[in-house]
Length: 254
Image: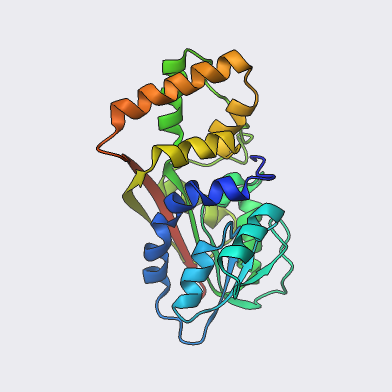
């Protein structure tokens, strides 16, 4: 859905910390390693994969974007990282015990097809997350304060989309054919560094970065002013305490 080309460094400096907010929940849901293997699909800068490796899992990180892989190699030099991604993973059927996709199914053109592929590779379980309350509300406020048009971005066709709730996520995964799906919601506060958020914008990360890249020089100045106003409105001390919520799903084979 969104173009992530070339954003590895900017993502690692910004949103990687936010997306790590579900790692403990996933680790708890999947239980102890006990010699099991885990595939992290859409591994980004490698933080989740490295965390599970540290817990004793035999981990492979799978990431299609070169700058993400480069950052992951630099930050986690002992991690096994391969080039690959959805919708077709370079793994045999039932070849990995557990497959994890953290905030990945919300970025693909066909979530059900992608979820089915995760299930094809997994021998024991699939764990996946999606946003129920994403960072988009913050950037919508920035755009409004800047007097710019709201960013529409790319939208899934109606037949591919799903409700961004625990129930909606569960229904989509069941429709994809995943067995024994359970979904819960996890809410946490990301204490974001405003400078890191601005790095994400200038680095082209996610919707805000894509919108900023398409603005004129004058519009970029307005965007920056709107950003500063929004930061001032939400700042507590030196950070922005921004609440986020994710739907966390686990599908287990009987």
